[in-house]
Amino acid sequence: MHKFSRASLLKALIPGLVLSLNLVGCKDPNANKTGGDAGTGTSTTAAAQDTSGDTIKVGQYASLTGETSTFGVESNAGLTFAVDELNAAGGIEVGGKKMKVEVETQDDQSKADEAKTIAVKFASDAKVVAVIGEVASSRSKTAAPEFQRAGIPMISPSSTNPEVTKVGDFIFRVCFIDPFQGFVMAKFASEELKLKKVAIMRDPSQDYSVGLADVFKEEFAKMGGAIAVDVSYNAKDSDFRSQLGQIKAAGADGIFIPGYYNEVGTIARQAKELGIEAPLMGGDGWDSEKLVEGAGGPGKALEGAYFSTHYSKDSKEQKVQDFVKAFSAKNGKAPASLVAQGYDAMMILADAIKRAGSTDRKKVRDALAQTKDYEAVTGKITIDANRNATKSAVVLQIKGAEFAYVKTIAPN
Image (tube, rainbow, N blue to C red):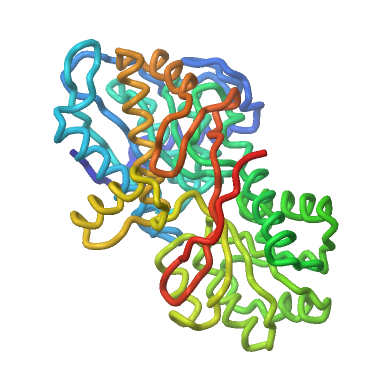
């Protein structure tokens, strides 16, 4: 079951706690201590876990509203589908008995400070066993230190910036990371598209965009390619013609834009207006049903563009087809990639709880760390020593309103 509430209301109740946490947030977040001083100061909000009761409480923080709301809405849809599936079967087996899952979902409004406020709230809840979230790396990085201090396992469905899990040993993800995604698109640009001179457009305010741009730049150069120009933009802007003019003048034969769907459509439209015909490429931040709409609709500015992501509904794997069929029947449309990732995050957590035979946070954390060859919807997942998922990526091409499967690229 789900309870939705506004995280912003919490600010009115505990301004002193939020202020104090902001003041201590500049220390090293990488220590692996829990329950007290975890490298960012002593937490006064973490509550000792209460394992009594017949349900398993899971927290979720997601961007249900705001600039990247489709990400949070889709991830939540996947998590909800997983919870309904688990509870319909009686729940998760824990030590010989079935326990149903209760989810409390908080809307962070696509804001990093709201994500942190929610994390403080969940850290003070003795019933929370684990937390799922966030999609965006910047928000995951802001909230993760609170869960590390409290000793609460956090699983990000799709934050790809490498720094997210470096916060501590209670922070996990079920997606690949930017170094792999950057490699995937550099390899695809070089080997499949035969590009020689690629331009990069990055948003320096987004950890996701910077990380992906840096890796693509390095890997493409290793493969013999050249970077025509590397320009910056602000996602809140509406005019990108200056940057695109630089790219056109540089004679780039491809453009890599590791941004989010809400600005990519506008960039693509303005590129077309300037007569730029070079293929556009991106990462999983493009993967939203609103992407094509923002580019003027099907068959318009983003037609034929490519991006890397975690899953394709067109996969022939039986597990994927079963998932697509069941989700589509219930929701009236096929599941997007972030739906699949939200589903996988919840199912991997359920698997860890079952293997741990306990809802004790530390035991669940240890079981998560031991996840190996888990058959997820988004591919076979093994959690490595840094709590990142080792898995393949897929490249999709935009054709009309659809994202068509092109290629799977596995880790080296």
